[in-house]
Image (cartoon, rainbow, N blue to C red):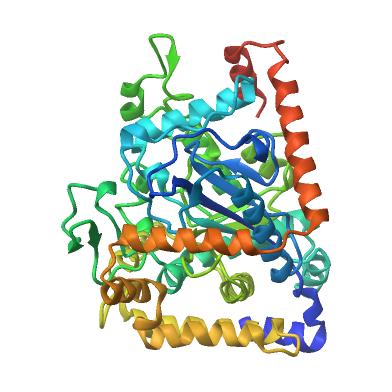
Length: 515
C-alpha cells in the first residue's frame, strides 16, 4: 500500500503535493549563570512579556526559555528564524548562558523558580498550572529541556489525496482521520527517533543524587547508563507512573478526545490529597488526572489550528491541522539544538507514517509500544537488543533497517535534485548499523576522551555557543522586528493586567466551562 501511494505521488500526481509542507520548532533552554548555576533572575525584560510574546516565552520555570518559530515551508527558513531568536536572546542576557543539553545543569529542586507571567488572570492560570506540575511530578523533572517538531502537509495535498482515495468524507473529516493514522504510526515508530536522536545518556548527579539501579558513576559528578540513548525519555525523565496508565487511544479523533476529556474531568485520589486551594493559595488548578491538555506527555500530539478556545474544543470543532513531535532531545552539537539533517529525516518519517497502512492500536500493542520506548531510552544501544512486535520477539536493529528502508522511499520523493533527504536517511542507516555513531554514544565517547564531567562538558558548550551567536552579524530589519514584537507583547500584557472585570476564580470557572 505504501508503494502504491508513493507511485501515485511520483507518477500519477506530483511530488510537489507533499514538498514544502509547513514545519516549525519549539525549543527549550535553561538560562544559567556563567558558572553553570540555574539562573534565579526574572525573564529578561528586553525579550518582552513571556505571557504574550509569540516566539519567546517560558515553560515550567522562569529560567526555562522556550523558543517558538513561525511555520515555514523550508527547513532553512525555520532554522534561520530559530537562529535569529537565539541571537536576540544572547544579546539580551546579562552574564548568562543557555544550557545546551536536555538534562539540566546543577539544580536544587527547592531553588527552581516557577515561571511568573504577571497578575493577569491568564498569567495566573499558567502559573498555577505549573505549580501543580511541581506538586505532581517534582520540580526537577520540569527543568528538563527538549525540542518539538511541528509539521503539516501542504494544503493542496488533501483534496487531491481524498480524490485519489475515492473518499466521500468532508475534507476536514478526511484530513483528521488520515492525520490520526499518522499519529498511530508515529507511536509505533517513536522508539526509532529516541534511538537515532536521543542525546541524554548521562546527567549531573545533582539532578538525581540518590542514583538509580540503571546508573553507573562516570566520575564524581556524573551518572550515566552505558547503553542509554535518552534518559530524558525514560522513567528518570518525563515518563512517570501516573501518566503511564492513561491509555488515551489514537484510533480515531473522537476516541482520542473522549480519552483526553475523561482525564481532564476525572479526579485522581493522589492529586486530590495534594489539595487545590490550601490556606488561600492554589497548589494546582484542579485535582483531575490532567489539569490541562498540555499536561498529557506523549511522543506525538494531534493539534488544531491556533485559536482562542481550548485545544480539545478546537480539535472537536475544526479537526486536526498538524502534528507535534515531542520525543526529541536537544542536539548539543547544533547551535540551536536541532539540525537540517534531523528535520529532513523527521519530515520523511512523518510522511511515511501518513502513507503507510495504519490499523487501529489494540491495548496489547499499546503496552508493547510503551515498553519499547522505555527499553530503547534506557538500553537502546545494547548489542543484540530485542523487542516485542505484535506478540513476536524481533531484533531492534532488523526492525530499524526495515523502517529506514521504507523512509528512504519517501525521502526520494521529497528530494528535488540535491539528494539531501536521501543523505539524511543514510546518516540514520549508518547509525543503525553502528550504534557508536548515535548522538548518545558520541556524547559518552567525548566525556570519556576529554575526562570532563557532564556538567563541565555542557558548560563549555554553552560558552562556545554564546560566543558563536554574539559574533554573528545581526540583520537590522530582523532586530527591529524582534524589538517591535517584544514591545508589543509587553503592551499587550499590561493591558491584560489592567483588565479587572473578573476575579481569578471567576476567570478560571469561565475558562473551564466554556472550553
